[in-house]
Length: 542
Ligand code: 3UK
Image (tube, rainbow, N blue to C red; front, top):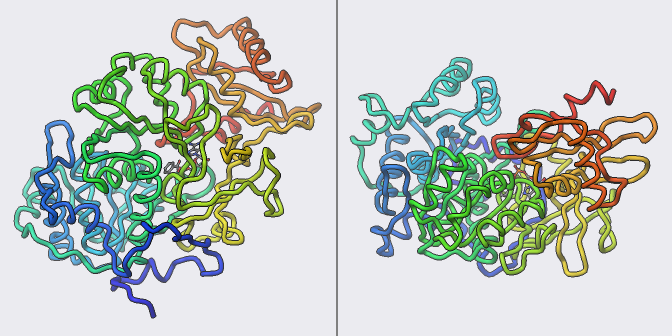
């Protein structure tokens, strides 16, 4: 049997069968990892060992930690886990907090102790937490005191979750008090590169969330592919952004990638547009990670960012409309870096840097990965043809004990569920989620293309486009539109928008129905929930 440091073998026992796993590629020289690998070593401890302990690592309001500070906290917490909380390698530790320094310290403590981090979105309720705890067989939890209530509710019904500590807690029973009694030294558990170190739950737009499994190797693979080849950060960069650390987009962008190059990160609990603009100025952020809708919301306030410290702006989570890219460039002068990533693949696998960005295209395949557009029989399509995006690389989908593995991985390829076309220069053009393609009078219409056309209208703040059933055409295109303040949702307004769309894209794609709304349903990661729009429009679509 291959070596593992896990005494609790739960994750190893619940890997998908080998035949259902994707093919993994390790061709790049930087992907040659040692057999024993604990990702805390290269990401955190190495910097202190090599004399960079005094360099700035994490900032937050009122907090300035060096690499040595973070290491000391993580070591103390690892000691609390092992000595006070009876943790053994392989146990699952639930982490629950807004983005803040203690959350980061806890994440590293879990890595150091050879356990498995299960980070959860701050807004999850007891019922959803219960699903996570049950599915991942969580035994331990480290939770921000302010988020205690829902966890307590869930824990009451989960007998296996026995050891819970709360942090950002000044009381005598808080994690900080326990840390104070522990040594600042901890020797990292000698994990195998194929030991699972984290379970990342998918956002679950349809059905129960799935738990994706990532090894120590996957964490490091994500740090050596997209960041050095596309983002190209350096040790003086100051990273900032909004995605939660429980979302692999945020974990990579706001913790793993900055630390992998010895840079620093700013962790903010709130990401409202004005807060973010102010924080960029105050902390002199150089690299920003957020979702397309957030760029759109910040753009009107972003004037002061022109010529500021900010030099790289990364957009992911959903398609970046060309209209939003243009708006951001007008406001700040910065060309955005778009990238498609997925929880299953850990991070970004198709992207373009600021010099190679093409409006309307996500980019080209990231070093270390291969990507292909397939027809429904799993054969590559001709150039320019829309089909199913399939990807392979050093990371890939492993759902923990889940039959849906067979839907995501076929013939060794990871199928992301996105409809894409590739052009002659290898640029991948996003069309829609494969389930979201609208078929109207025999035409395939991608909602995001219609959304992009609407977003170019100055009175449109946000919009979502779906197909609703129609007797004559099968489906018709319907837009749900949020207007910018000061505009009236009148039939004349709807007509104006329809005419506007007809002028910029093929007229058959125009939204035959327009409904005005105050907000659109979104996930905590900024994704538009089209299925919810479809549900509320079922009446008409029957
Ligand atoms: C969509 C995009 C077009 C696409 C993620 C960066 O979003 C992330 O992970 P999720 O598991 O969702 C994956 C799905 O989201 N998507 C993401 N980025 C783009 N579509 N253009 C994009 N740039 O449908 C994909 O299949 O929540 C993103 C890094 C890590 C991540 N986990």
